[in-house]
Length: 81
Ligand code: FES
Image (cartoon, rainbow, N blue to C red; front, side, top):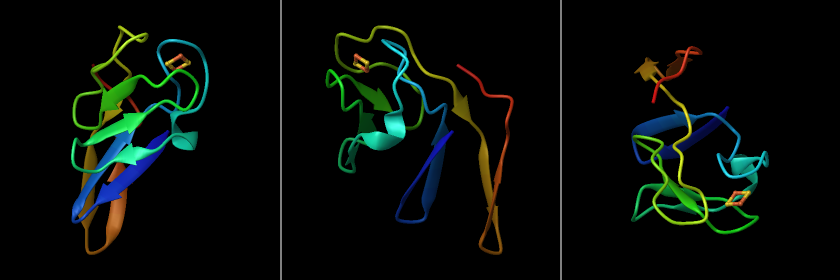
């Protein structure tokens, strides 16, 4: 899982690009776009929905619900599309 905090928002996605099995956590976060970029071929994914926003990836990655209570981050490990 890759967890990203931007300001007071926290996002969690499966840490695996849907194009090939490389770790999204090794890519850059695009804060203005709320996306994460795969380092290998440059596809970007929405942090909020997991949707692939640019080629070559076309399939989404799973996202995970995040709750923050008193500074503690709770993640739903089930994931959703
Ligand atoms: S492996 Fe991520 S875009 Fe190709």
